[in-house]
Image 1 (cartoon, rainbow, N blue to C red):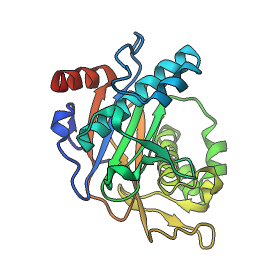
Image 2 (image 1 turned 180 degrees about the horizontal axis):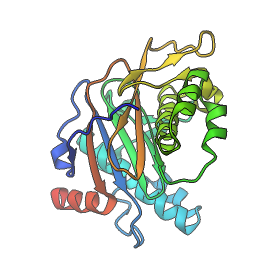
Image 3 (image 1 turned 45 degrees about the vertical axis):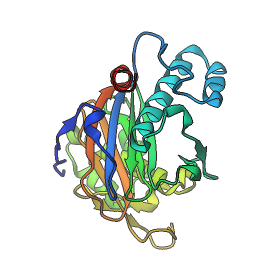
Image 4 (image 1 turned 60 degrees about the vertical axis):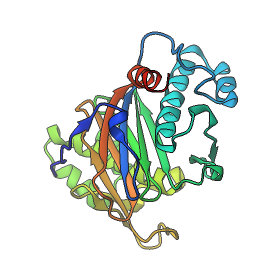
Amino acid sequence: MWRIPVPEIVHSIAAAGELGAGDVHLWLVDVSGQSPPLHTTADFLSAFELARAETLPTGKRDRYLRIRTVLRLLLAHYLRIPPRSIVIRNEPNGKPTLATRHHMDIRFNLSHTGGVVLLGFSRAGDIGVDAERRNRPADFPKIARRIFSDNEYACFEQLPDAQQRSFFYMVWTRKEALLKGIGRGLRVPMNAFEVTGPTPSPARFQSGMLRIPVHDEWYVGDAAFDSDYCCAYALPGLPADPRLFQRSEGELCSEWRHTHG
């Protein structure tokens, strides 16, 4: 197994500063608040988001409101404009992106699992992220046989049982992050490429199985946030080390209110 570098984790939106050219910021945000998200008002969200929230069951509605609020607050920080004025659209493949009216080269992606959401922001090109809870029960050998390449599965089988779970989630989240980054999703067989190696590592594609016309090489890596979650990112080209940030949704909202009134 490869050792994941443990960088400093920052706990303030103000400390994030600007997203400079080539920068990558990863945020792990707790959205499991027990009280209803009353602070997610029209000041933050678009009319479409508020209307969509009303169509969801209570539990899903609260989580949706929290996640969209976090996304807009962080984008507003980087764009230096009010959260509600940000226009987010979906590309034909379903990947969310900023509307061209913002004239910014910021790319973003998000993944939620359990009570957290992982958000990635990049000015180093497209980005994909994925997060999974490590304690989710699963038939790891069966799933690995289906989604791992032959080489990855051979590595998995050689590991002691105590290490197989960690290896499984490392490979799984890296593969999901890569597919989200390139916008291919489940249309690409997950065993058609390999993502093992020290972080960050180049993804290796089986000949003829997947062609990426935009970039010649993608890199995948791990983000060492919390032992309860396995987090990964994918970027085109060898990236600079991402900066890591961790807050709760309530803390982000309070900090934003305090700063912006």
